[in-house]
Amino acid sequence: MCRTMIDTMLILIAAVFALAGFVKGVIGLGLPTVSMGLLATTMTPVQALTIVIVPAIVTNIWQTFAGPYLRDIIRRLWPLLLTTAIAIWFSGSLMTGPYAKYGAIVLGVLLVVYAVVTLVKFQFKTAPKDEKWVGGIVGAITGVVSAATGVQVIPSMPFMQSIGMEKNELVQALGLYFTVATMAQAFNLTSAGLLNAATAVPGVVAMITAFAGMFLGQAVRDRMAPDQFRRWFLIAMLLLGIYLAISATLAVMK
Image (tube, rainbow, N blue to C red; front, side, top):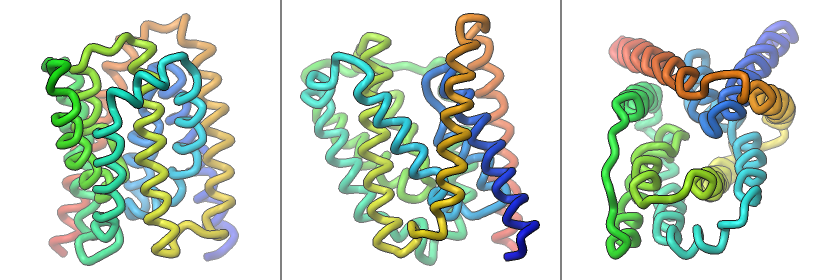
């Protein structure tokens, strides 16, 4: 790869993660979703994930410990966490094997589903007595979806919203959940030889710009209307998902 192409790719990565970090700073989530969706327009999902993985782990670890609810979250969500990790570990070939060419299609569809479900404010309630067995099923499904696309928001996020967590507890729970899921994905990528020294520079660029974007987003959060920002963010994810699904389908059909 020539120097010009490398420089262009690093500029693209920096711009994508600055935007993704900004979104996370404003609304508290979205870094992997935004970065995977945008990077997948120029590379395969597995290539995008090798860049996303380190910033995602670092920012989510920070979010995991930024609150007092960790013990209660683990007690309530351990089946969700465990089955997600197991499903990701056993489904690693979905992103690197013969079905990898469909990854961008699935990612596009997932972005559309995520945007629509959130825009219409779809919600359901899970009774406390059902939390653990429902969480186990949701974790297994999310793990398979995550192994194929690198995104862990469906159906895990609607489930966590359904169990009645307080707002700050939910943010911390999302941080823990995404940390577990991305570390399981990092294990798969390392085992496949895809997470190595060659991904170090893009990963560092991504992490620095993600944190810069996140701090900027946090700084302007109080000056913006988060609900309005979230709505336009979801509309953009919807359009991006449609574009990805259609363009990837056409590419597979050629």
